[in-house]
Image (cartoon, rainbow, N blue to C red):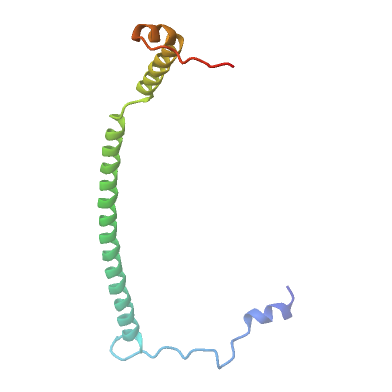
Length: 124
C-alpha cells in the first residue's frame, strides 16, 4: 500500500464524532455515567432472568403435554391391536360366496324339495 492508502486508516476521526474521555471521580470511584450503565445492565439481566423462568415453565408444561400424548398413542395402539384383522373378513366373504354359488347350482333340487314349481313361460 502506498502512503496515501494508509492515510485513510490512520487519520483521526473528525472532532464531531469523537467522544470525550470518561471523567473519573476522585477517591477511586467509577467513571462518570458508569453507575447508570450498570443499573441498566442489571435491569436487563433481571428481565432476562424472568424470561428464562417463563421459558422453563413453558418447557415443563410442554414436556407434560408430550408425555400425556405419548400415553394416548400407546393406548390407541393397544385398542387398534385388539381389532379383528382382515382374515375374518376374507373368510366371511368366501363362505357367503360359496353359499350363493351352492344355491344357484342346486336351485332345481331345492325347488323340488320345497315343492315350488318353476314359473311357466307362455309362448304363443
